[in-house]
Length: 287
Image 1 (spheres, rainbow, N blue to C red):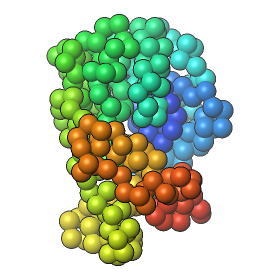
Image 2: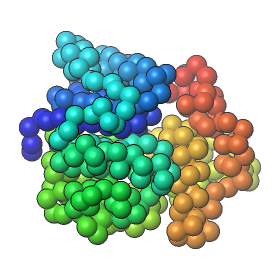
Image 3: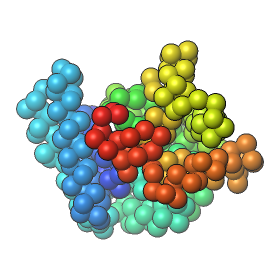
Image 4: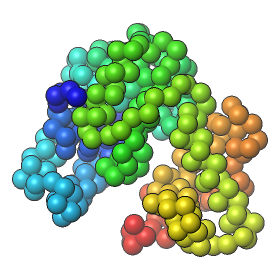
């Protein structure tokens, strides 16, 4: 177990905000990079709400939570990050060229360890953007980050044993359990999760049942904490679609996205973040 240190997260979407939150609450000096001012404000508000909920549930002291979240440094550019941070985690959209560009910027800040929060893209392909791929790997977190305990550590061909052990230590320092997997399309968790999600979407498309009853069947029969359709809304239907398209290319038609999913994304029905998906999130009552 390591002592706290200095970390940064690049990208203040749902996942990036959650990752920054758990590190800040664990006492790490935390930087969160987000060029969009509106999204940065939303991330700050999201962290505050998560902190309030942690206090309400007795998981955190109010004064400590306030102080640690107030210390998170929101900045607008990777180039403004300090040099030589202990860890920088990239958490930008699942687009290879976008991630490569961001990782190149991160590399120029010379952190001791660089990680991508990708849920499906190849760590080996992404490693071309960093000068020393031995200190680069995947650290795949799960949403909501403060509730789900796993970090999937994805080891590329060049990733060193030291980098893997460092990633384990960071994960354990924020109370997470780790699983180390090789760099294969979809890793372990994304493949398993997507199979269930896509089949549930096909069932809605085929008129088998409603999203509510499909989710109820899964949570009751298999004791999943959240049904696959509600979880898809939380993850983001656009994210589901991106991952499905990537895995269809890499692994075959079994991962082809259903037309219903494509149509919903085209209409802007992305799930919780847009207010509408398989559920109505307009007043957040579906949380």
